[in-house]
Each structure stands twice: as structure tokens, then as C-alpha cells.
Image (cartoon, rainbow, N blue to C red; front, side, top):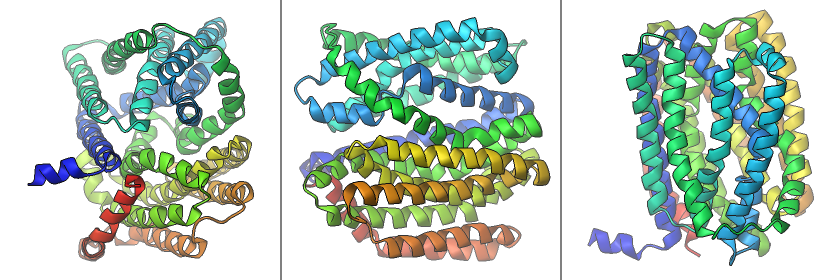
Length: 473
């Protein structure tokens, strides 16, 4: 009976649930792995790993040109009969950009090393990743857009398990550099997986390259590169600042806090992958009320999750790391507050992207990241690494405000009930930051968590109905 009910669900609902569960499981695996890493790697090496991953993301924005992001969704919408050719064409374009990036970074390596502090072999590892990773990104994005969830879930789980497993084996069996064992073990495993999808995309498209897609993609993404860079730096530049101002061990502590706070983003990432095509369709119909009816209940649930994570911070950190990382709990509340405003950016930017007014999103992101650098330097120098989260919180709030203004300008409508959004934001922010003063009193914290869980159960039917509405057209 249950199996029949599941089969009877709309394809969009089944895809949304599958992507959500896959995200939960894979993120859960990554959180299970973190306690292992914190126990087999010294804090300095854990911090250096975090720095490598930060530079990998920063360089990847330029080397891969973010072609699997918003522009790819637009390509799926505009070319329904040539999606395979579009995917492979974008892959070739990405490789051309990667080749140019590789030549430049090798030529400038002496200068690059002074800035990033990474060995040449790690730079080459990055460039190899940049060649093959887009193939996997394009494939998964296309599958998600078409609501084909089975193989995406399978390969997501394979990647999530294989990469850290090989890395841990390499760390435990090597007597040399633990940093190299961690990075090469994990990343080369992913490269092997990406190669499979590179070959698949090439064969599926019959090696057909449509260069006519390139100009549009470049023109769409060029103004967005500063935006994508700013978005990433807004969430991760604090690691670079802490590394240079305080030290790599403190980067490890801040990274743990950030990992805990980002638990809630697992849910949002899964839901937003289905919310994007839904938003696009309703924008075509100028049906903004439907967007609001679906998005605001989801935002409310997300706010409740943010509060629960802030309240559970001491317990989560105790599970994820050793007692050396205990003070990281005090960085979590401001970071989680910033995450809530970060999610609001997506709600507004989804609509701005539909209208292809990417320059407005760029303005918000660049403004926020410049301010974050200035505030981050000021606060970290004067108050230590724990203050970095407050700088990011302020900047995410500003970014969300600017993106909301941009959305109103392009849509000529406020779309969402902003009075409700404002009150919800104030509640989440105040309760999250106030939780710092409750870390010594577990009973009060557990009482608040119990109350939130009770409310979620009471309104569970409404929540489930809302999620179904995303794709049950």
C-alpha cells in the first residue's frame, strides 16, 4: 500500500524528496567524517586542509567560470531539445577557460605561492580537478532540472563515501605528509569519478559542440563572476583572515563552528534545487502569490532549524571534535544568524536570475564582501577570531536587503510578505545570539528545542502540503 502511494506521487514531489534525503545522508556522512579528521589530524593540518579547500573554491570560480550555476538552468529552459549538446558545449568552454587559467597560474606561481602558501603539486591537483569536475556538475544539474533523481542519488552517495574513505586510509597508512595524504587521497578519488561523467557527456552529445551557446553563457556569467566570488568570500574569507592574523589552529576552530552552522544549509540546498524551476514557472505566469505561499513556510521551518542548531551547539561540537575545539561553540550563533540571511538572498536572487538582471545580484555581493573584509580585519585584530562571525552576520543582512531591493525593481512587486519575513528574521536572530548565554544551562535550551519540535509536529501537515506544491502543478 505504501509503495503504491509513493509511486502515485507526482514526479516532482518524488524528486524533491529523493534529493532532500540524498543531501541529508551525504551531509550526514561528511559530518560523521569530521570527528575522524579532527582526531587523526593535528589542528594545524586540519586548518591547512580548510585553507586548501577555500582556495580551491576561489580559484574554481575563475577556472570553471561557474557555468553550472544559474546560466545552465537558463540553458536547460531555453534549449529543451538540445540539452545534451548544450551540456557538452558548456563543458568544452569550461575546459578552454581552465586551460587559460592553468597557464596563467603556473606562470605566476612564485607570486601565487607567496599569497596562498600552497605547494606547486597542490596547485596542479586543483587544475586537474577543474578540468573534470564540471562534467559531474553539468550532469547532476541537468538531472535535477529534469527531475531524474535515481542516478543522482546513487552517484552522490558513492562520491560521499569513496572520497573520505580513501583519504582516511591514506592518512592512517602514511608516515609522511598527513596533509598530502588527506588532500590527494580525497580529491583524486573524485577525479576518477568525474572522468566517468566527462566521457558520458561526450558520448551522449555525440561530441557535438555548439559554439553559438558560448557567447550567451559568457555574457551572462561575466558580470556574475564578481558575484560568485563575493558570495563565497562572504562565507569563507574569515578563514583566510584568521590564518593571516591569528593562526592555522584558530582556522580549524572557526571551521568547526562554520561546519556546525551550515548543517541547516543541507535542507535549503535540497529544497532550493526544486524551488528554482518552480519559481521560474510562476514568474512566467506573474503568479508571485504562489511563490510566496510556498517559500515562506519553508523559510519558517528553516528559521526553526537555525534556532535548534544554535541551541544544540555545545553538544554538536562535542561530538564533532575533541575538547580542544570547545570554544568554537561561541562562534556558532552569529554564523547561524548569517546563514538565515544568506538563505533569504536565494529567495530574492532566484527571481532576479529569472529576469536575467544578474548585475543587481553582483552589486549586492561585491558590496557585502568588501564590507566583510573591512569589518573582519577590524574585529579579528581587536577581539580575536570569534568576532569574525558577527562581521559576516552584518554583511549577509546587508546583502539580503540589497537583493530584495533588486527583486522589487525587476519584478515590480515585493513578491513575499515582508512584514512576516522581518518579524521571523528578528526572532531567529535574537534567539540564536541569546543562546550564547544559555550554554551553561542545558535544561532551558532543551526546553526551547522541545517547544520548536512540538510546533513543527503540529504544523507538519502544512509543511508537507507546501513541499508538495512546489512540483505538484
